[in-house]
View 1 (cartoon, rainbow, N blue to C red):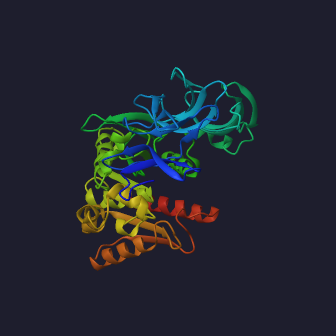
View 2: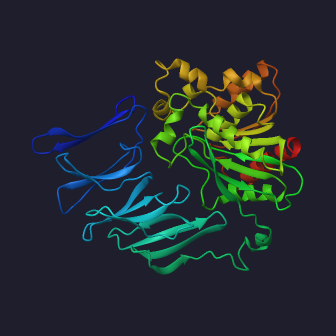
Length: 435
């Protein structure tokens, strides 16, 4: 049971015979609790496994069914993302986690008796796995930033069995004609003022001579991550195209994003649109030190929370970002999903100042650069009202901007030709105003 302010969670046990409930455990946070479904009761003994962020990182704990804590099963400055499977006969828990690097998801075998943790999957890849019910085998869909997803079948110890979809980039593969011009991005870190390391990804144009415009792509919000060693899908191919067309393409995961522990997430509490922009500015400060970057031609692009970030970047840091693209943006948090928003922002009734400061409207009059806003008119996640309220505000203040709305489209602007249109429009905007 979660409290209304999402800072306390209680796990109850219910006795069917007596119809009485008892509190097995209580979790509390001074900011918010991230919900999960990692609760597993063991069949062969009166115990269960529970996940908690009580030590700052999501880890596993072993409890008796009366609520007595037996021991912590995993620990360290890394996160368990989920329980993949449990083999009670061997006493092994198979978990998805980020122990080796936050940029890759791996499967680890955790010994319930010794708490030893052993990586099963290959380093240098990002793995999405599904175990059989008896935890004997698993399907692994894995990729890296330069290699599209491959699917294999493996024994629980990581031994390869067979390909389900090798998807090898051979002569007949759709990517083969583009292999010779493929640009592999670089990864690195930048230190924030508190010495927190922020991970970035950087695509350099093939011809690095001269000064180049930059497209900064970001998301920036909670429970999400942009900088990963994982195949990027359609958007990743778009980054590749932009780099081949002479753009520098850059992303940095600011504080507030996921898989780095609770202290990394918490700075956005009741302060959305603040620390995220400061960290994105740190990224631009780094870009300005590179000889091949034109510091006057830096653009920004994001969708959903990233669209909100693009607006805040253009409005709060006009000296950093000359051109912006904002897709399906939240513009006013009072208009968004209650459970999501109040988790990070508190109640609009008691935290009015925080909501006011997190809205884009107090800063919109600072718009100087060329801003494109696009939105699905049937968006049932971030309602189209977010966009129209901003349109009116900018019009009322005589601020010029660009619009592309998609009739009948929801939050992700799906549909092959529609997505082609969307990416062509975004590219045209940057080509027109940033190159």
